Image 1: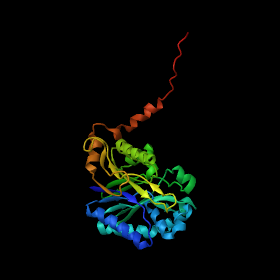
Image 2: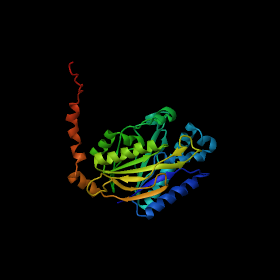
Image 3: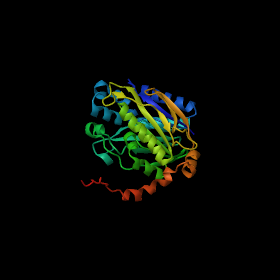
Image 4: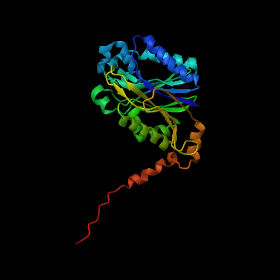
Length: 301
């Protein structure tokens, strides 16, 4: 299949039509290049805060609630675009005030759409300090692996990708493709997610798709500065590039990055790779059980 990862800038909109026009153009461009799976970034939906005006967009709580207000219309639009182009789309994540789970605080939710409509939603499960202490965004409940015509897809949103047990759980549940949408304001933050996504591709012997927000949005509270590069990773093993990088953009460059990826290559490397990280993972357990302290011996005078 052909995968498209977005390095996505946030724009100011005067109307809903402006937003719809932008997303339609991005989807049309990727579909026109033959992409079957399109991945937008974490907090890509935050540009919808502009529809509330400058005062709302510049206020943390106001921006979160304004974006949540447009979630039903955004979902319907992404479903229409996925159906029209016959593609799968992970929409840009955003705050959702899901009172059945989180009460009066939002989760950070990404939604996956296919040609037949919405496939499902994945909430971020590990909150960064900024989300915990400033935005008061709360963790979702559990992880999902989505069965699709393209294969089994999991989503680890930004910070989630930095925790190996989450990626391992996805791999054990059958995930072949891991989507990693992100939003990071500093190079160090982007690098942490990049390293995490590459490590999850190595450990789980799967494909990881990294789609970040890029550029400045000084009008949007919490999203003023954003850095990253869109990339697609695999295990550095047979059937994949020796660097593990299938494709990547220049740092900060907006636009789509495309990569050809194969479920068969994932199956092959898991079955007969030069190394077998996925299969050998359980061998860690008895070694961990034997961890002990070694104290340096002092020679007698």
